[in-house]
Image (cartoon, rainbow, N blue to C red; front, side, top):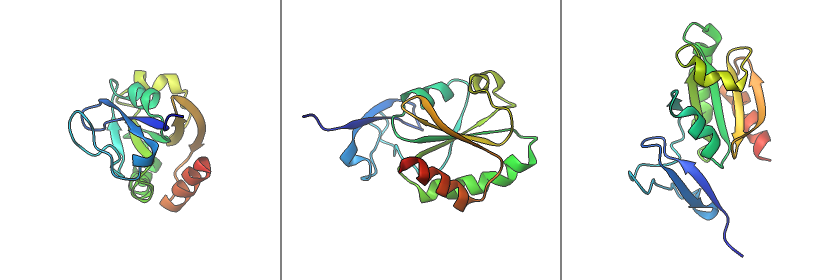
Length: 145
């Protein structure tokens, strides 16, 4: 029986890495650039990286869809960052929908901010509206259970 492994996209060079499940908690590094794969902070996505992060990451990936004009989005940004720091084995990412409209369009975002949870390229849950860090972390933990 083979050991389970997960694909993780490097937030620095965007290479896809295969990481054995037992190594996920051991601060895995990218095989291409040597940088940490799990950074415990949100990654800024763009038109080129959003679909790769969503499609190629096997671990729980939370994407915050936000806009620069959205006051609740701006208020939630530091809360999202705190939640990311509390859950180092979850990938947190953000995409600015007013800057990368076409990249965000396939995800059918109707209100901002909206957090969408993906695992293995599939949407498993979404949460609209600004939340404090403890509620974000609680929601994310409920998806891992």
